[in-house]
Image (cartoon, rainbow, N blue to C red):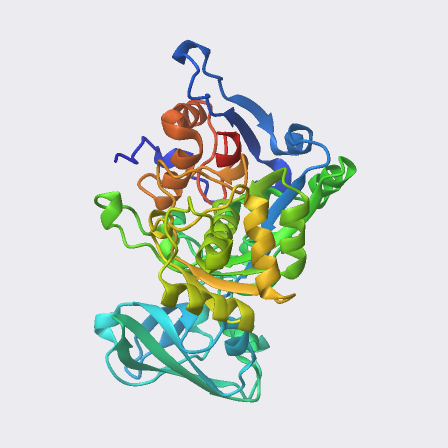
Amino acid sequence: MNLDYNLPASSIAARPTPERDGSRLLSFAAPSPSAVPSAAPSPSDHQFTDLPGLLPAGSALWTNETRVLRARLYGRKPTGGSVELLLLDPDELSVEQAMSVHSSCVWYVMIGGAKRWKTGDLTFDFEAAQVATDAPDASDAPANLDLTARRLPEKNGRFRVDFRWTGGQSFGEILETAGTIPLPPYMNRHSDEEDSTRYQTLFAKHLGSVAAPTAGLHFSKDVLQSIAQRKITSHHVTLHVGIGTFKPVSGPLDEHVMHAERCELSPEALDALIAKPERTVVGTTTLRTLESAYWLACLTRSSSETSATAKEVPHEAAREAARAAVIAGRQAHIPQWIHRQNLPEYETYEDAIADLRELAQGQTIRFSTEIMIVPGYKIRSTSRLVTNFHMPGSTLLCIIEAAVGPSWRDAYAHAVASGYRFLSYGDACLLNFQSAADL
């Protein structure tokens, strides 16, 4: 499948707009399958502040409340050379646990110049951190802070680093002192003080992402107030965005290895998903969470609840393992092609979530998801998506084509020709399409 399109370098936004809600908004409705080409709807141009009026009154808005880690660190080798580390996720700890430890922790990382650092401890005297201007001034660091990093043997083909420090600070406090915001590589610049706030959404709450859920960056207090005035309720999920979101599709879709990302759905979120079926989903990360929750319900569905016409009861061991994880409040797992496993499905999305809520018995549902939403997949959780314009060749474009079909090319061509700004700090688009419930 061809996921490429012409994206001029001049269309990529390297900086945010002066105001959060100052971006443009392209509204686009996917043509119905029965529509003749000449009757296909055209994109319409708006400002993001117009969004509340484009949403159904009394509906629900869903956003991702992950918070971006100051995950980029600059250290020095014993020989004096600098090494750049990008934290990905902790080894054998949750991010929350890793943030609260006070002397040592092990992280999976990306290493800039890995071949040049084999042995010897990195030190962090905060001078190297000044390469990025959003790093706190070295004079602000605690006098007794002594942070080092040692490279460990790889695990599952991934780099690992053991961080150790003195001074009594938590690792979260260490990152606030020594770390910088990890901007996407296509911005071609180091982060600065503006990024410390503008690369976080107003919803940002739970630390764990190495990239922002960028569709949420446009929402200001004024826009949220206008949304509330239309009796549109706001709800949240958590998906911690991983570095794999930038991995392009370089071959056949079926051969692409999808990255895993950690998600959470609170009891309050489950209740709202059942009670408010008219949803506007903000961002592909939020959509990925809600779709994964549906398949988790299918995977954990009791065999006694499936009808004689159900396609196939899932493998008992996999079903029981997933059920046990949800019941215990532990992390379940959604594999990449779960939607191809012939699991017994539900008549409605709300029925699926109601079963999941009952199984969780008032606990937060936690899972990692590798789900890959590709063309032909029928979205179940929503028929309305607020998102940014995505990189050519990305898995995020797969999601867009699954939602609106190949007509996304018309919308993107219009956006390029009309001077829209693309990617993380770029403009937004509102996509309307038919969900599985509409078909």
